[in-house]
Image (tube, rainbow, N blue to C red; front, top):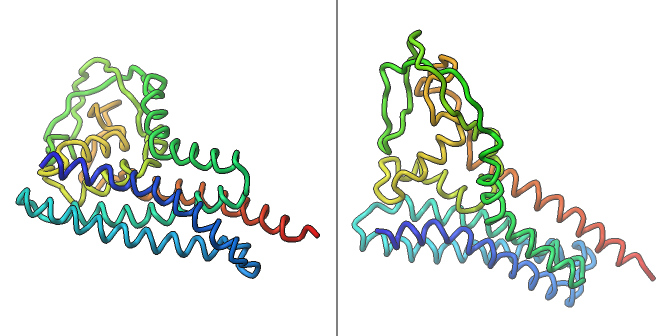
Length: 263
């Protein structure tokens, strides 16, 4: 079971690094073949890298489904990991293509460094910022608490009885940064794929709780319902990655176009 959970969690991040390498290699091959009508090889390289990412996602699905079968669990987690791996293959492949479009050693180094920041540095930075979002606020007594399968409160009402003050960490202010990591995206998706926490345990629920900033109930007497708005961590993470990849592709295309216009 542990091997299944670890493999599913790590595959999107591993796939992201592999996609960066494929993107760099693909651009080099397309540019060498001569693709002046397609951004100097950017679009063909991006399509080729995306296709490779889909193949990797299929292989990921097969391997994880086998592990799920051995563990006696359903394949929802495997499907979620494969889906996230496919998306990360396209987005991080774009990072690799854009870095290779610079046609310089520093550009490629910067591409790898950025990939490392997105995969691990973003989550590490969010963890380092936790002390900065600590405040002390008044709380009231929570009543009619409803618990989720992972043991976290998903709904509660607040009485008017004061319970003093408590340290509150407003992690909802920084979780957008952690959500950029591919593994965090997967774990956030895993909250729906594994609602009972049989494979991934309490981690997805804890991440969502951090994203919503509801670790301490009834802060300032504010209740919470089951249908209360929640931070869409997967959407936030993928949108952040897409924004970075899009900006890099635009810059890479500009550099490539300028180079082709030179005599």
